[in-house]
Length: 154
Image (cartoon, rainbow, N blue to C red; front, side, top):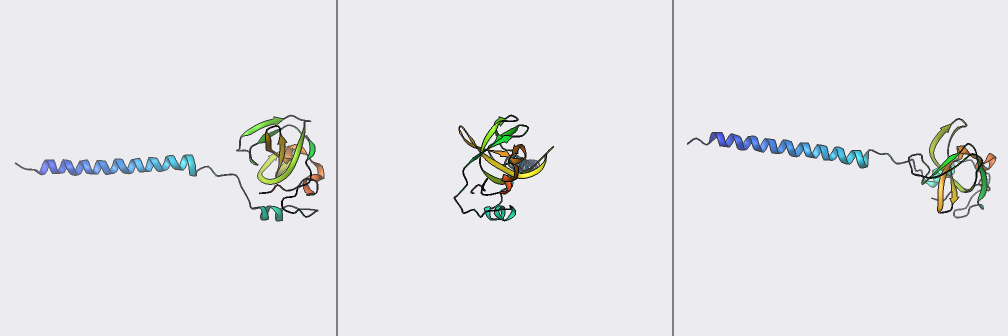
């Protein structure tokens, strides 16, 4: 009896097995890449680069911030978990609402009808804090004065 046909079937079965395993590995990598590696996190710069890129009028020592101040919302603003538009919206303040600003931080660049800025304000909420783009809060010249709105600690 000739054993050649069964030997070919075994080699063919082994080749199919290798192809299926490689296919599964490629699909698995694509799945991990899509869920984990593909989403780019918001730009987080070190405190030193943040401090050097912001014009200041009064030096700020680490850990000391000016007292929180109240400012008026200009046109409505979403308050988010972080200083970027891809973070969860916690609440929204309508035009004219007053919000308490704790400090400012450099975050994602936001562009609107009033211009563009990468400055975000950490605001006080009933349940903690959130971040609002400075583009939609009327801070006047205070946004450039660290004795009025300090830079958030890292």
